[in-house]
Amino acid sequence: MQTATLTIGTRGSPLALAQAHEARARLMAAHGLPEEAFAIEVISTSGDRIQDRPLSEAGGKGLFTKEIEEALLDRRIDIAVHSSKDMPTQLPDGLELSAFLPREDVRDAFIGRAAPTIRGLPHGATVGSSSLRRQALIRRMRPDISVVTFRGNVQTRLRKLEEGQVAGTMLACAGLKRLGMADVVTDLMPLDIFPPAPGQGAICIESRIGDERIARLLEPLDHRDTALALACERAFLAALDGSCRTPIAGHAVVDGSRLRFGGLILSPDGQNAHDVTIEGRAGDAASLGRSAGETVRAKAGPRFFEGWS
Image 1 (tube, helix red, strand yellow):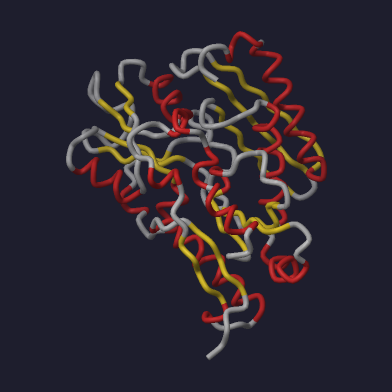
Image 2 (tube, one colour):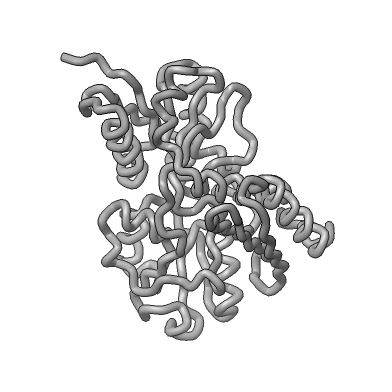
């Protein structure tokens, strides 16, 4: 029986496991290795265990990565597979994002029970979302709607919706596609009205800096256009000190040697917003994102962030 060549760390939700299985399948194909060469280790994170309050109150994005990164640093696992939008802009010393898989659909999906679209919901309806960005964008579209915090994995949120706790909810289209559940979507949100979170739809792989064996295994998996787009989006986020406490949207598109980026920050009620668009060389992805973040921060002014960021 073959000993595992590499141990993959992941959260235990069905979506996280689907993403880990995709990474494993791509490693198998790239290196001609059997499934048993890759072990998958499920690691429980604080973000999975804390369900009674918004992540912004509990500690932010790092709650979904802390325990997995500790396992990486302790060499209990060789790589970690994450949803890119869950990743803080500052990683622990010794770790890096070493590969990005080809990006899925970046759009947000609405799943409506009372109506198929947000605009079609009755006055005063309740929509559930755990994302401050989605909450702010929903309030911008429909100020009359009550938006409540809605935690849990995809299946949990859909169950709560079916039970009638809310009239509708929002999920990432990419996650539903990866779970084979795209048929539950009642409306896909246009990018010009409902821009995505930085990193949405992209799976990233985290590893130890300087681990040459792992770097060689991961090199064939890194998708150039996704990596460049994420470098821009993450630099935008970093320039704004973005976290779960701040409603921020950002989306970069790479077209050959060029990159286009659009970013947006909102107040939590959705009524105040500042946007930015920028275009340049794809090779300058990170500096373009940083410049866009500085531009939108200057537009908004320091008082924009007071009291809620």
